[in-house]
Image (cartoon, rainbow, N blue to C red; front, top):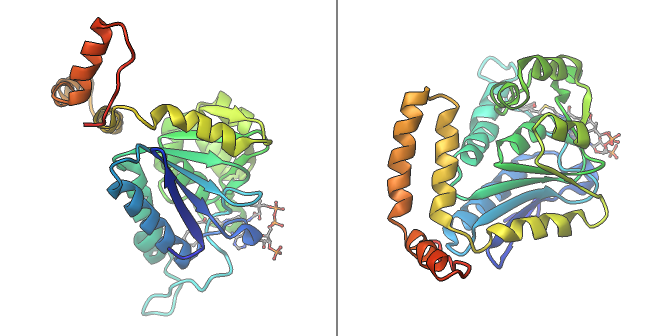
Length: 262
Ligand code: LHQ
């Protein structure tokens, strides 16, 4: 892994830290490479139940590095679509369908594509001083990395459009009130608070986690009838796990279950 994002895992919790603090962790090609490697490592490690993505220093990330050379098409014109298709969109898709729990630990500003990639994570935790900014309009661009699909579904279309047209900063507490952020923690000891929160997943029922995520992904598009059928099918898969057998035995014995993730 390049040092533009670092990876560490222990005790069932993995963490990828975006690591260009002097440039507010703006995304570069090297950072995407490191992110892909971190996502691979966490996915392949059977002991990992939950992946935290956070930023080094005072920011989560300022989005695309605006000073980086951007690709051009054969006609010489900037081809930002190519950049999105190559780096941002595969990352957004991967986070959206990642088989383990993902937590965006937004420690400071999350601007542009970084705000939208944070939203692709399952749970968003934020430090009190953090903010989210659909900064695209300030540089004459449109929200990308899935933002125009995710944001209206999370906070409603009028708020999502207003935030995108104004480029206003959305403070953590307001983001929580809108349903984008699950919990806001104090700046001091933010990562410790995030780790304590993540610890509840560290030894949990991994198959159920994956299936729960699948159910909610499909509910974005399914009608009620299709979702009922999907729930029945997913429940059969969950019921076939050792963890369900163990949980029933633990319930009868009035003791906590010891999940193995299988
Ligand atoms: C930066 C950046 C940055 C480089 C701060 N790049 N250096 C996808 C596909 C292809 C192309 C286009 O885009 C996309 C998706 C996108 O993400 S577009 C949106 C890109 N992001 C932005 O427009 C946000 C730009 N940054 C800002 O507006 C501010 O930096 C925010 C509001 C995030 C934070 O403001 P401050 O706290 O006042 O910090 P600062 O502006 O002083 O930044 C600190 C340093 O970080 C500074 O460097 P310097 O060497 O002068 O100390 C900035 O130049 C650098 N930096 N963002 N995106």
